[in-house]
Length: 314
Image (cartoon, rainbow, N blue to C red; front, side):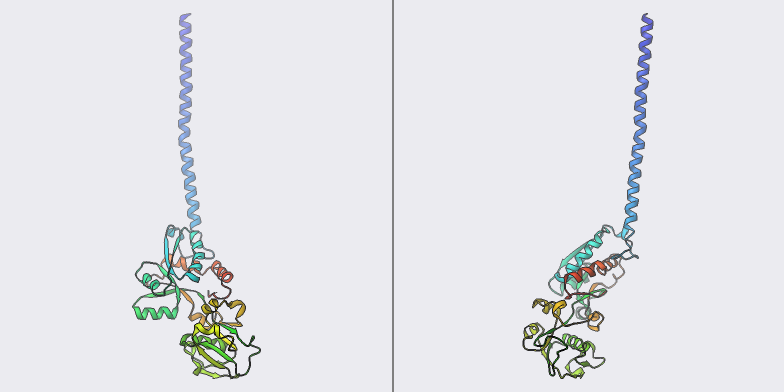
């Protein structure tokens, strides 16, 4: 009997140990499977992320740029607060989708942005037009170039004593800025409206002496640009710079009776541009920035925000 009980206990113990061994073995074999699944999911996620990062070919993106390679990059741009920094913030959102950070440094002067671009403190700047850049390079020995034209701020013809062009009286007085560049823009705007004809080739150096036809005998009254809004009560019309019109509370879109066209020589010449140091024009990060700044999203923002005082030129 004792032998039988001993044998029974031994058999029970053997079965118990076998069961424990089976459970441990099963658990051990499941661990690698679980680890493999996690590794597989991670690989799939990385592949999906990589594929998504490489698929930036729509509006605001340059199909020639490897955005996956730019992930984690920071682009630094010097800009005037309004409207340039505001416009850059729209581009910032576009670049962020590609994991590119746009850092905007605001400046209120027109010298430092070019100097910090020249010395490499920033990657680009956005605040100036072409003639200013050309003159700055000549005077300061800098090596800066434009990579994209973004917007222009149009001159407008505003009504004074006479409210429409159809009512243009004989001998009307029209006030214009008295500095050479801005007077030429004003005269070209008047010429585009058929009020006067400016000598061919005078372009953006035109003065009153270049008027070759004046069928209504209008009188061109030259004065300091900042004073123009205050003269409207005394003249029939005034051609006013966009910034001074805004400061006076005028809306280019609602108050001006004629505005520089985006295709005009003045608009093309005085377009505000994205600028980099020479040699960086083909830098992928700069190309990505230029693509974002010339996107439909930026154009829509400009149209919705500035009421014609700022006009996209791309």
